[in-house]
Image (cartoon, rainbow, N blue to C red; front, side, top):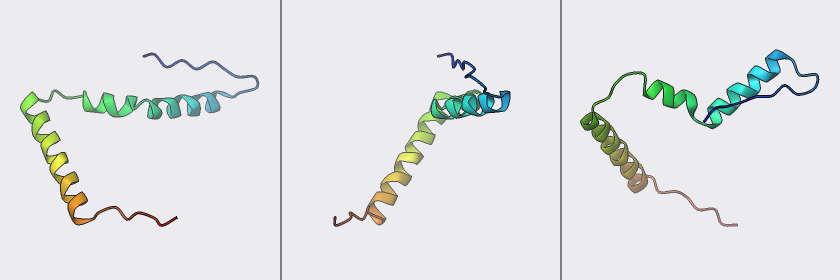
Length: 70
């Protein structure tokens, strides 16, 4: 999963760096690196996922999505 950037004609280093950063964001690479920076026990990972699911369910029940009438 290597991200490669080839220089385009008349492209500055700043423009290349900007394209590289956008590709890293698109691939969620920075988010993944930050997540793996510290070890997380499997039980903690499950607990975090369960909390996230509970909050998502709470939001969906209390604030249902409004459908547009187009």
